[in-house]
Image (cartoon, rainbow, N blue to C red; front, side, top):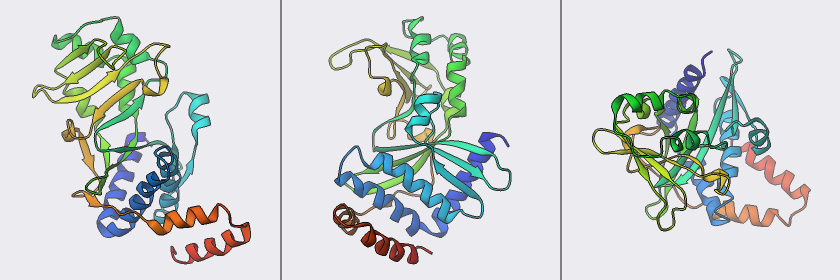
Length: 273
């Protein structure tokens, strides 16, 4: 089965669940974003584990999911957080989870700087339609069409949240001009911004050679500037709440013995069946 078919089918099922059982999805998001209280670097990794558990619990008749982990990503040059397996076709979908606050969001990591290397050979802003078509038809750009991502985004002041996907095909098809941004101020490396005919900033390529942070390279966008290129799981933004009980459970469990963990685990399992 084609990855896009599997991906779109899963997104359709997730949308349906968000309509039928909105509370379950919002509980998941509240618990994930609550973990920011512990550390800004904590909730992203745990979000991947939480999504795996969520899929295996709520879609157990259709899918199985495993957390691939960062070691697989580092060794295989793949941006995969979750391996989603369709039970009927036995096809596996590589799924990437992005957890960001409302605003700038990294859609794809350019570990090998292939996007940067290609644009850097041009080294200027580009407005010619045919030249733009040639650029986005290059393998380093068409590879973006194979990205299957799930973005968990939140707004802390208003306690609102959403799950969105990014339409890479629509984004690439609508590129009208590319603006080169030279190093300035805090920006130490060249960047390229891609705009549509309405001057909407669709996405940007944050570049850099070996001296730049490898995890900062790649394709970035903005959840407000380019909102029309996102598709939402919910019909409208949802409210999330801080789960103080979860915070206490985590902190107390760190000094509790395994026997106490076993009792708490059984109680949690009995309430999620």
